[in-house]
Image (cartoon, rainbow, N blue to C red; front, side, top):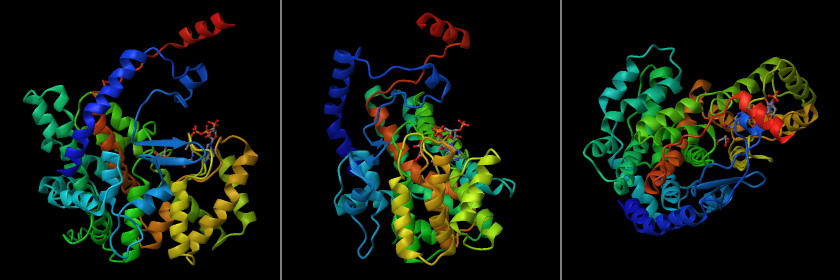
Length: 434
Ligand code: NMX
Ligand code: MLT
């Protein structure tokens, strides 16, 4: 496996670097923690490390040092396509180098070889009540794959610590290979009366997802690749990445850990915001019977805020400008669906909502995040069932969190266990400092 050899060759140097930092400079401070941060969701606390991506508040995400426009420009792509192979992105995240066409295709081939989903996973899904939310089904399907874990088996057989990363990598490729099929199967079960289109061995990971969704349209193939690349990683502190990392830090395998990450993605302040965002846009559309004026959007936004709700798709814990992942999707829409009324509405909202949030003065970041438009794009290609949208986010997010899990094992990151304090202790600390 090409990715395995590449990671293996880098390991001695990475292990030396980390060992030296901890041994020789372990006492160097990287930050302080305030009482506001302890009560405030640890916002801004520097307590995690990853070399796979970094979010700069002004610039946005860099994946292995590359900005979103650079990633989309430099990764190899199918002939005549404008959006790269997702296999190349996975190579970039795992290995840290921009892949050649052959290297990107090697990952795509590995995924094809390992893509078959065991029948019992479908049986588990079919046994669930029809009204079950797609995210619950997705998380459950991932857990149902757990008996296949190579890591869990090798651990029972007594592998050494230095070997942990290898079965973790194998599990990660086995898992990610199956996710587009599982996601499309859930869609068919919930919304197409169980009519499932099997994968086409000639298509790549992203395009195959489009095919299995029953949308045989080259633009939707492009969108699928774009969507998964953009949702892949956002450093380690976001809730789904952190939940995956925390679960995996106990040496549980990637199936348990990624299922934990998905359960966290299912919250409306995180991944579920994409379904909420489209729901919000549609309620604006319905209220005004079409694309509203700026004034009407302003009034609607204020109504939402006054009723104590958030405006989904806006705000961010780290970013302080429009999310480059939003911009990439917005540009895709400008190119491919400029006349779509929902897109026109999303554009008016993008012009108006930041001003309203600034006027209200609460949100630290009034700008659009990636969820402000992703549902609009799906809707255009006929995927109108918004409850499904977070599953799409989850398929993309698997790439970043599994790459991180492999490297966390390779560099021997330990079980996470921060210290908690009582309120009385914090009060005492505050008084002592007065
Ligand atoms: N609409 C209304 N109020 C907001 C918004 C928004 N979009 N964003 C932040 N605020 C409020 C927030 O609720 C908080 O209010 P209070 O003091 O009454 O508790 C105040 O502004 C300060 O929050 P911030 O420090 O700016 O944001 P925080 O880091 O706590 O949370 C989000 C970040 C993303 C959870 C928050 O901006 C939000 O709820 N946005 C809407 C939901 C959303 O789009 N989530 C998806 C984020 C991306 N993703 O996929 O994960
Ligand atoms: C993400 O992609 O995980 C979201 O933007 C949330 C975050 O980074 O906190």
